Image (cartoon, rainbow, N blue to C red; front, side, top):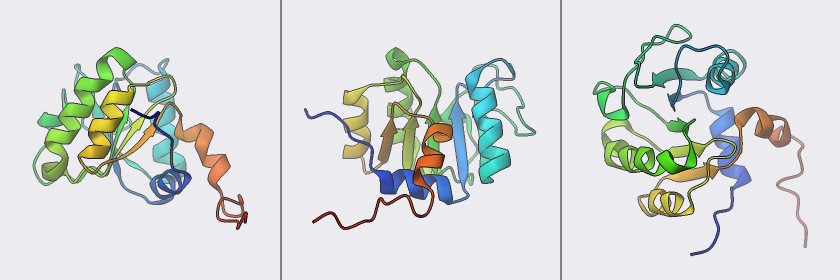
Length: 154
């Protein structure tokens, strides 16, 4: 199996298209990275959040759910953003694959330090785009218009 490579066009699309993101691992602790990054997504990019955490806490004004499966029918979630450790992300990926059609999931974002090549391959095999081992706050400045990503290099 070859190593996963993030597609800059996928990253650009995800960060420039207002949508709903389910943020797995987002609880109400303001000291956690998930809390701060999700607030940035909401305020700076206009992302609608669906917190997913065992506590099912309301975060940034959004109702929380214990699992992706608990998110109500009729909710469209474009991206599942994973703030869980690498050892646990495979189960989240499998749940996202299982809920893909019901929730309209198109992509998985595995946060900085979250790496699972096999889970990424399963997701891609199921038709989901995957971004792995990076953070939207890191990628956003890199993918602004004029970043040269579409330049002809031949």
